[in-house]
Structures are given as structure tokens and as C-alpha cells.
Image (tube, rainbow, N blue to C red; front, top):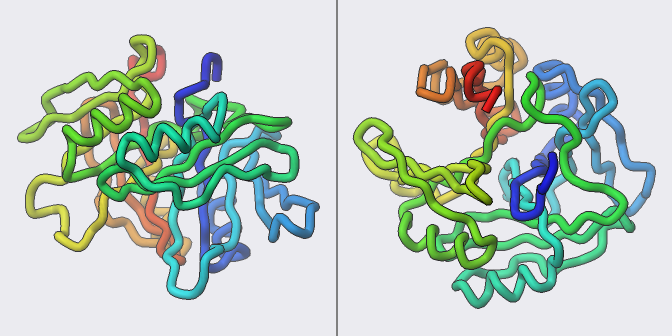
Length: 259
């Protein structure tokens, strides 16, 4: 993805059962799994589609009771500078920037409302290598109860512009860099958002057929949390893998893919 700095370009899964999760996702999306040879990597797995990196997965680090979850990474020039900007903007640094075996530097943060995200400063490895086809990252979406605070936070940290659009009874925000939409934000308004659900970044993957993908999730032991539903960008469903990792799939309408 050209001009990727300030753009979400990578996602990875922290899971309670790496072997089972690998079997689930490779079947669902047709990914190949490449396990890192470095012993200190803990079996970190890069998922590839026709040889190109599209996502990653690794074991949960941080103790018992941590849930399986997908993390969104924003590509940055300088992870240390970003960490400083996060703190200045009212966020929290969960993991200070550190080198990942020469592949690059990463850091993990909470935004001002408590949504977790990460950044990646490329070394020998960048983010995803292919997009806009089934089995690749389609969209990253912040769901939050603090829309105004998030606009200020992400605008300050990454320079994102907020472009508001009507979406049913709420206002949807598309984050933009240089006029290009690179992520979204959904307000957690209404009864469909449980009070104990924290703000979070949702990961969407392209699929050729949303209904078929949702059915395959069920067949593989996962759960369909939101059934296939039509929205302006396409047809999506929210799913949960057998270990509890939540993600979405979407068949994007052709005109959006061409944009």
C-alpha cells in the first residue's frame, strides 16, 4: 500500500490457542501459515495469501484470563515520537516501543477512551503486502462512546481528518489521510451496545461471499454475532472464532473497491 504512513496496514491476533486458531483462519480465508523461526518469537505466525503477508497471530502474552483479540496496527515513521504524542493527547502507553527481531519497532497504546491499538515502524518488514481481494484486510473501525474525544486524539496523534456521514440513526465517521478514507469510527449509541463492552478497534476482512463465509465460520466452530447485513459499502457479518476472537467479514461493493 503506497503512502502507508499514518494508515492501518497490519492486524494480528493474540489467541489462547494458536494451533487451533491457525487451523480456523487458514481454512476460512485460504491463508498459508508461516511460523517465525526465532525461538524468542513464541511461534508468531504470519498468514500469507499466495505468498503475500496479510495478517499475523501469536500466543497471548500478559497472563491468564486475557481474551483472544485482533489488534489494529498503524504504520508510523517513529514509534518513540508516536508514544510521546499518545501521552500528550491523553492516551496511555501499554507497551513502550521495542525492536521486533530487526523486522521493525512496535508499541501498544490505549486511546483517550480506552480503546487499544498498536503502531508499527517498519524495519525489514512492512505491513500487509496485498489488499482489496478476498482474504485480505478490508477496513479498521473504532467503536467508541467518546466520538469528539477520539476525533481530537487521533487527529493529534496521526493527523487524521474526520469526515462525518449519515448512517441510519447515527453519524459514521471516516478517518481520512490526504483526502483518502483509511479507517472508520462508529459511535456506541443504542441498546445494541452492552454497557460492559469497552471501546475497541474492529477488524474487517474481504470475502467473496459474506453468507458463505458466515456459514463456514459456524461449520468451523465459530459464532456469527451479527448475521450477514447489507450496508452502503457492502454486505458484512460480525463473527467470533472458537477462542473468542471477534472480527468481521465484508463483501465490498465493486464501486468501493475501484475507488
